[in-house]
Image (cartoon, rainbow, N blue to C red; front, top):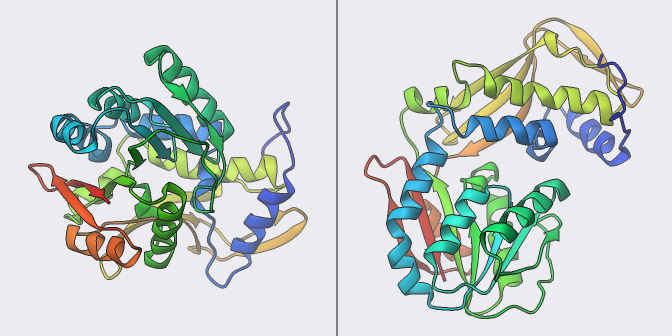
Length: 312
C-alpha cells in the first residue's frame, strides 16, 4: 500500500466510482481516473514515444489542412476545445485560423485547464480566454462567444466512448455549440494489431506506468490497499468490437480494500481501465449523422492511420 504523503486526500466521489466499477461482475474503472497530475505527465510522455503514432500523425494532418480550414471557417472564430490539455494541437489550430477571437478550454481537470490558459496567454495575448472546468459529456452553458463557432475534440478521445456514449456526447456537443457551429473531430482508424499493440504497450514501459498509476491514485484518494507490483499492464486488440482494451491483470489471488470494502481478485483476473475504439470514416460519418451532424470534410494521412472530421 502507498505510504501516506502530504498529497494524500480521501475523495468520496473517487471511492464511490471505484467501488461501483470494482464490484461489477466484470471489474472496470472509468478512464478519467487515469488522469491525475502524474497520469497527465505520463500521458504527455506517451505522446512522444516512437510507437505512439496518434499525436504526431494528427499534428501532421492539422498542419496539412490548415489553409483549407482557414478558408472554410472564415475570420474571427471562437474555438471550444473539449478535453483541453494538448496545447500544441490547439495552438496549431488557432494559428491556422484567420484572426480567431476567443478560445474556450474545457476539461474536468482544473489543473489541465489552468495550464492551458497560461500557455495560451503567452502565445496569443490578444485572444479572449474563457476556461471551463466541467464534464464535457454533460450539458454545459457557454459564455457569449463570437461567431463562427468551432468545436475541437482532438486526440481520438472520442475513441474512449462506446457507440451509445459517443452518440450521447455528439448530441450534447451539438446542443452546447448551437446552430451554425462546426466541430473538428480527431478519430483513430482501424489498422494492424502489429501497429496498435505497441502503441498501447511500448517497449519503455511508459504506458504500463500510466495504467498502474491508477492504483496509486486509488490508494491515495479512495483509501485503497492496492499493491501495484501485484498487477501488470495488458493491451488487448478486440477485433470484434474494433477497439484496443487496456487492462490491469492481477498476478496473484488477493483481496484489496477500497474505502474499507474488500474486493477479491483471482489470479489472472483483470480490471478493464480503458477502451480505444478505432472507427472507419464511413462509420464515424454515420454516427455523427445520427446525432444530428452533417459531414463537411474528412481528411486522412497518407498511411491511413488517423482521420480528422469536420462536422456541421
